Amino acid sequence: MTDIDDKDEERHRAKMAKRKAVQDAEVASKTVEKGLLIVNTGPGKGKTTAAFGLALRMLGYGKRVGVVQFIKGKWHTGEKDAFAAFGDRVVWHAMGEGFTWETQDLKRDIAAAEAAWAKVLELMADPSISLLVLDELNIALRYDYLDLDKVVAALKARREGLHVVVTGRNAKPALVEAADLVTEMGVTKHHFSAGVKAQQGIEF
Image (cartoon, rainbow, N blue to C red; front, side, top):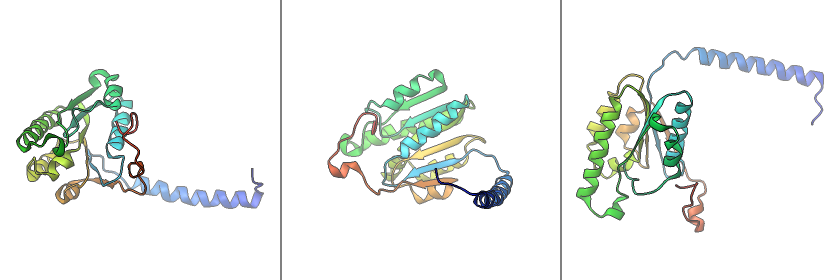
């Protein structure tokens, strides 16, 4: 351990005391509490993973969580199995039929997205749900499977106190504008480019 003399210790204490005063004032200035519309987008990995991190945090406080997956549906995922341990505190609907290049059936893709959106509206009206994860909704909007204006309007009109997390690349500007928090996941380096395949526990 580096030796620290009394003067260094006192300078550090004074600096941190000033820092704490600034931080405390900043925290005290925040007085609004509301349900948030959160968007995780961008080309990088971690959008859904971050959303499920929030779900786990909410569950830690004894709340109920809903998940509606728009594209992913046929995949078996570790997170679905893990959240099953919470019983009816997690409502999970995997309603996608795969990416559009897999289904190659536009009518089927649209029908699946519409069914998933109907489930979203149902869960948004359930007062027992505190957090709703709309996984890959951005993809459904990108391909025009759903009416963007209607989706954004419904999300903006959600009941007070409901947090909603939307994931997927290429978030539409209208959704970004409506959101309270938008995180862009960038790619600095990705193992796929080195030929590493999707792996259990990492990608699914």
